[in-house]
Image (cartoon, rainbow, N blue to C red; front, side, top):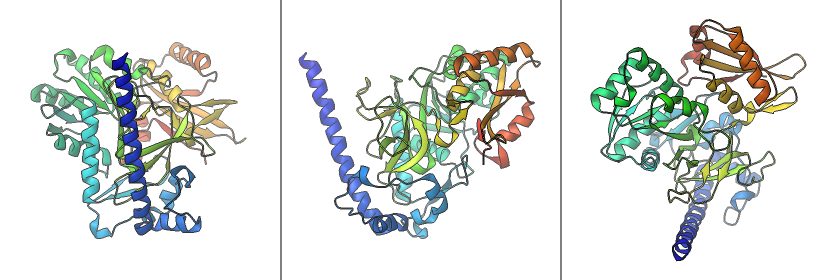
Length: 431
């Protein structure tokens, strides 16, 4: 009993320390923005906001549209102090440039160092980066810097070329991958074709980027199960956005993704801007701490998640988030039913005969939402498989989207428009 009380007291003290640290950092951020940010200077003046007394939740939120329209008004340093220019992927509108100072780059390295530490990695690991380090992609550069800060060896193989990736893993004794989960399925398929036993490879862990490894109930997703069925590795999900310059990462307990409280304040808001309760869906809203170039205050990411603030069994006391269920703009009202993209993905990922897919959101002449799914089949087009898939949609989300077959080359052209660095799983064609 005493041990339990001591544990609770330790957790309480840690949370109090976090709260005190964040309050101090928040006050320093307000002073910094008031002195250096044209965008927030205007917000404070027009709203007659006293930055010395205002509480975080009393401040207006910042929208993605404001960041797009007034991109350079968020810059807080002379351009001569910018060390790196990165950019968002532009999935939901025009890309946004995020400028980083040298200190911001060091903060980014620390953030990803923390991600690797949460996974249990150290300087003895060999980390293979199966993601691009060009095209202004912040994540590739960040994971590289984080691994170097940890002292681990890094191998930059980039995306694609599954045969080469497998050979590098074997030849260099790679212990950890940073990769998009769906590409792991391609590696599994290639290994089977080459008669390679994946269990003989030295890889033990994967940091999975870009696609969630959990469902809405914090359970392992179908994609997670499909990968581990053939390749028994530990998969750690992560969530990040270029604008926030911070990542959330799953620990070995796999009960949500941990925030780094020294780098970010995170809120979960409803449509009216009110905080939602734990395990309710809310929009991830962040305030960056320690950013020099383009700090953000109560920035609404558009991503919809659940959260949990209870202490984790791993010993950490930081807030944890569940998977991204969808983006606010991508919520679909289809035939009277609200549908999150994650529910569609989970059904499609379960179908082993589907090699690749793209979900399109359209608007018909009556201004109603429509869902059209294009799929690439691993075998000849099967009407029986298609009928079964439609029945699954009817049973699980109560509506049946339009589904059509497409060849692999044509689908990839749609998923990587204009040389995009990010493979699209959903495209919103609505006005």
